Length: 202
Image (tube, rainbow, N blue to C red; front, top):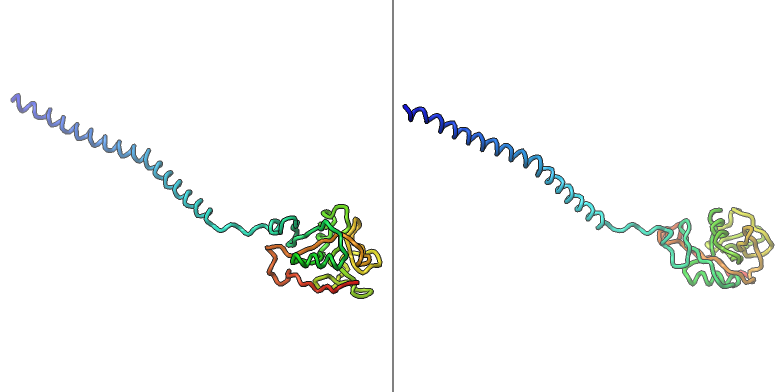
């Protein structure tokens, strides 16, 4: 009778032990879910970000900006590179000098071009690529006829920029000169290729 009364005690201990193990396992799983799953997710996101950054870094560098696509000492503006000379030459010699650089005396396509030249020219007066073909017609060194974009003062046959805009004088006069050529971004486009069609002007 004494032995029969003790059996339930051992049975209860076994059940309590199993319950403890079950609760510990559930608690451990809950801890793993609460602590390690966020860490794993964060680690995965970090790895993905590193991969994305590496792929972006491997992309080809962008085309250099047009402002930076000109030779040294050639300021760039609106798809062109300009050279402001330090020496004085006649109009014809100036054009030959520009041609030796693969350029021509500067062509002004817009008033913005003219303003740019006036802002950068400093004190000297500079020859540009505009010459008088006939008494009433001016032509650019690239062969296009001048469209009257700005007034040309003076009675000479070759044009230059001064403090007031554009004037003209004898082509044999000695002046500084401005060369222009397409920058590296514009080079190769049919509309921007330089074509030296200027004759020898007396």
